[in-house]
Length: 180
Image (cartoon, rainbow, N blue to C red; front, side, top):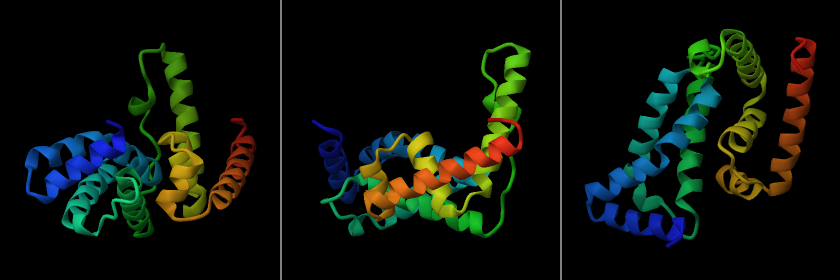
């Protein structure tokens, strides 16, 4: 069973009131939704709050979901909209915390990784929402151009164009800070 068939079966069960199916869908998509929200918002608490709102809205409006499209695209669209709306309200412009970036490397590597991650996150936060969204979906959520096109409801050419422009802007920002 492919992921779309699995999702359709779970959605059908959710509509019938099956809480286990609901929990499975949340388990499948909670981390990717959180990661997308986090990269747009730059704040783990806001990303967690957004993730909760996304799933509440998704399941409140499950009857509006069109099964001709992938559930993944539908829920990501909700996530992106919620994150952008929260960002627009101006609640969060915090850079990444060192502890969230540092793994099991030595202290020098951890500091460098933390610095680089802060620079990248800072650059992301300076991009317009259109650019930031395509970068997050492509590079942090690892979506294909087609998936991004579906999620954002824009042509693939527009996705590619925005991604190219966003990369150029990020490159210039990082170069001007001596990072790239």
